[in-house]
Length: 324
Image 1 (cartoon, rainbow, N blue to C red):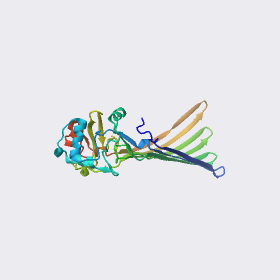
Image 2 (tube, one colour):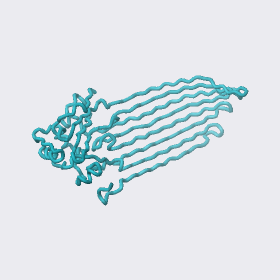
Image 3 (cartoon, helix red, strand yellow):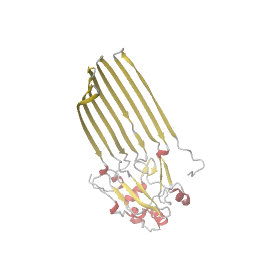
Image 4 (cartoon, rainbow, N blue to C red):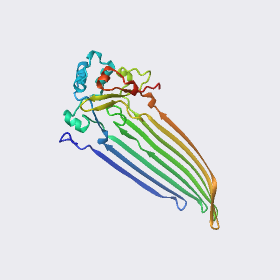
């Protein structure tokens, strides 16, 4: 839905390129082949967030003004003197010169209710890229023996400014990629008997990390030694809009990932006798899986509504704390 007639279509840039090369190194003896492919994507729409804040929230973030917002949007009277210092700090924090919890920029409540949000946050574009490379070398030792060496490389990082949070400052980066290497030796022992030996290695990684523009202590929050800013659900922000707002890292996979290594060794024979083909041999593989999970270093704080957030009245049943 277009809010402003002159609103521009978010830019999308997609580029893909690559190439291949191959040929003999030594005539009839050694051959090579290589390929590379890459893509680059920049998507401004993917870097836009739509959220709902108290409709009457303005850039006046004094205790008196915030109490007035709770009265207007929730019909709740809040004594400005009783507003929790941590809540007051959070409402006055800024990221990139803008309030961490922004003011509404869709000012017509009817339009906001139709859309389901009253703030659009255009951040930087979400980006993704990948580089894939492949290299093969084939060596014919003799008419009866061949050696093949293969290598594959992939690197595919991406970034989303709102991958872990609907507000600014908690951009999420995913680092993903893999490497594969193999060695294959085939020997013709007899016209009806071949022997193949293979060795391979695979390394895979996928790790997500979230930026941290603040620490709990910056907001005056004591989380028993935790230094990761918590995910905070402010609850219902406006009775008329009937929406909630979450700030901070809210994704379940904000700081986690895995690294895997696998080795494979195979020796097998292929024997053709009469109308039958017999395969026999042995295989050994070893897998190492390392999990990195830092989600337990982030607490989750929940409040019933915006007025309870201002008063620091935590909804304990919906909040979680970890000891790291």
